[in-house]
Length: 200
Image 1: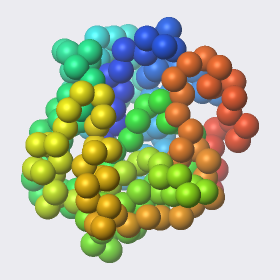
Image 2: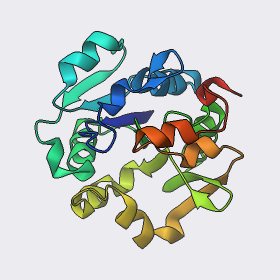
Image 3: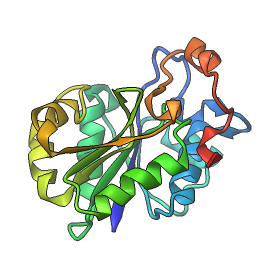
């Protein structure tokens, strides 16, 4: 089993609103990410929320996921990722890490990365026009080392750079896998399909 982890605890200070509730089409961003995960054939995501957890629960159906609340989102992405990794079952093949501020990734991209994981990849990530994107897969064998490397708002980037020989790059034609939303202008800059998550 591949365990999806959705990081959605960010304070959203540059955006001015909770990124999990950012409207993407007719849905909150977190709902779009969860729909993408389901469309890719993955189940039971671990969802890491922050201070606005109650508002998110009221706006998004989270009944098919495992919700964890990070009481200290100000400690950065690594703290949320560490909590997600701690909650991941030990018998999982590995974890597939999603960011709530990247809601335009296509379900076909998620399936392509998951397929590499099932073929035995240690690390796997989509690459669009030579830029590495998300979601990123980490095999169970490296979870302990990944957790030990986490610091601040860097997440798994340092670990990936130091283990680049173990990385399987999955070439995709999907700008959504490299497009993240930090400010309101970023959302307005998206030129792809409004709901790329459902596009095959």
